[in-house]
Length: 206
Image 1 (cartoon, one colour):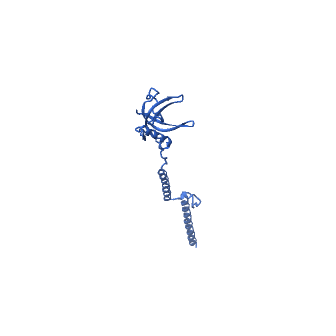
Image 2: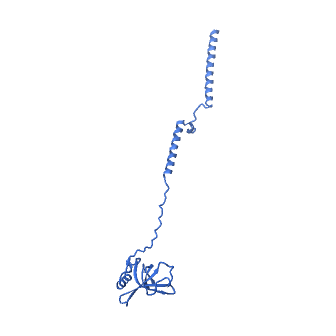
Image 3: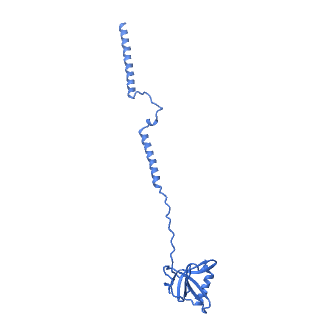
């Protein structure tokens, strides 16, 4: 009977040792994991993300940055077209109407036509032959090219203003009643209610 009792005690003692060893092993493993024996589902997912997920996010960010830089560099600043400067009209000595070779009657008639239909001739360079006469006045000097008809009973008068303003009258001008050939731009002006015609930018060639 004592043998049977001793045998039963021995069995119970061995079973207690085995259970104690398993408990110690489980505790050792839990401590090795930082003392946490469960997964915290409320923690930030970024802490539990795998290296593959981090690489994917990094590549996506690089692509987005690359597109932004490419878009910025491809947009060229708009520049306004350069404004071109207006051309300055140059004076031309080209003769538009040459009546210097007309006889006095024809030249007289032509000048009458020019005054009556001035719109056709204003701004045109006219060349004419006539008799020179100058007149000094308080406000300004007047210089004339006088064209008479063959009978010398009628005449047409064209005033002129020389291009060279440094010339002085009478020293640098032709003699009174001398024949001249002059060309200039046909122009009209008014003094009061009276209209007058002159050749501006004029040059005396004879």
